[in-house]
Length: 620
Image (cartoon, rainbow, N blue to C red; front, side, top):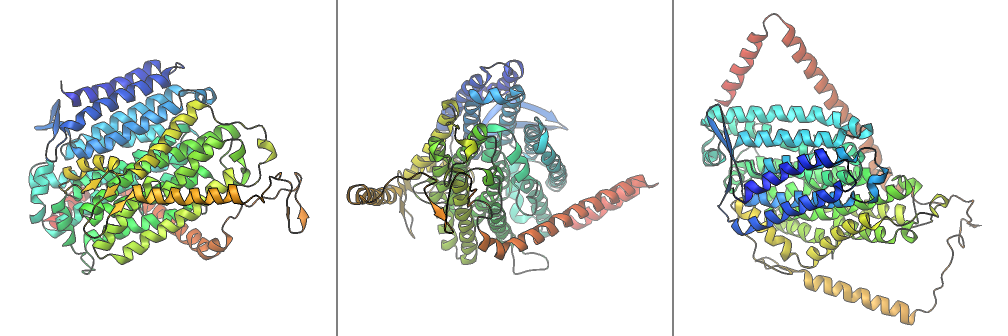
């Protein structure tokens, strides 16, 4: 038994442990210990990770004369670190007072451990069959996590099930085509054959893989299911889903299509009717639109969890955009953004859940002024939104800088503008988030609200601190990215503790953060030592519109927060987004009815044969 065998065995035993002991009060702490031990084993594996080395598990079996094996590369190791880290903090968060408000914590513990095990199986896949098996395990494990408590999350998850089953069919079709064409399902055989595959066959594979993997990642136009499903999942499990679950699609796309030879082939793969657009450019623009549209949908949300969930979709678009640039700088930026996003998005969801735990709501129109009652939650949310907005000193700034720099270096100014537009929308919406929850007037209903317990505050605060430390010293996180980048065949970035040295421009966050803190310190000195004109006032010692405010005057800025912006984009989003969604629904319904009718005719086999012949003629 090697370390990878031990890791998979420990993950499976965690599922068993949660099944038998998940109902006990100490189950959350057992989960923390289990995920911590798995993370230690994974860290031990770090020393064995080389650019071209695969650590193979002894787990194997044969399916139709194909021997299935599992092994871990640097790419799988990188995403495994994020997965286990997200599970550790989610379990820690629910180990204390949170579980007193839940009806069935046992199911929450089981589905969390099941998701981790499924992800490890996926991340260790070594051919298209094991990839398909792992993908289906992850899809069903995510479905169980979203549906175990019922309610709105379950309704949204059933919507996801339709998407997921369609994606599974697309992936299975791609697997069959590769098997028929190459006689093997091995990744290495597929990558070696990429330069010689016919354009028609490769286009079909690109479409099938994109459909299959983009559904999980919620890339346009397959994004409509995710926000509701993730936002309504109970407690810290929503944090886990948003932090890493959707990133399994990024892992799969990077693994299958974006090897260096794959990027070169995609650049020369022109669209049949639009010969001025190649496959890589098409993927990049889909990623850019995914970064923009969901971000501005987030701007319109009045529920904190929905706002964050929509941002999760947009941030996934930025990750894919960096990966599709296909240079060491772009790939590093996309992968680093996946890590950074997991830290600040996990912290944000946990902070919002703490607010829900204390106030019973995440409705932005019913909150405000909680900074005086929940100061630590405010600090976590503040650090989190700085990371989400991509501003220093948090780590989100570093990964976005890498993505922007790669777009500039590759001569893609329009894509750079698109990425900048998405960042503008993020800044606007996260200010709305923190203002409507923590700033402004404290509502009467929340006078007696207290800070969340330390069992909830500590894990989310540590996540926020990790985001700050890896923003101040990004070399720590880039060392993790190196393993994944080299596994994909790219050179590691020449980085140091504070950033990197690059031929067209360098970044040193130690200087950036130092200057930022210096400026803040100068402002604080001027304000506190030389100001002397401020005095504290009660929140009701104020007036607006010529009338003094009092407890009886419901004066709040939160509702309709950006009316000017909404007048410009609101109608377009409402009408166009709904029209696209209804079009997809009608197409799916029509396709289902057509398939139903074809299956009920007297000669269904004839129709299937005709379809198979047409497909073979196309790829041939």
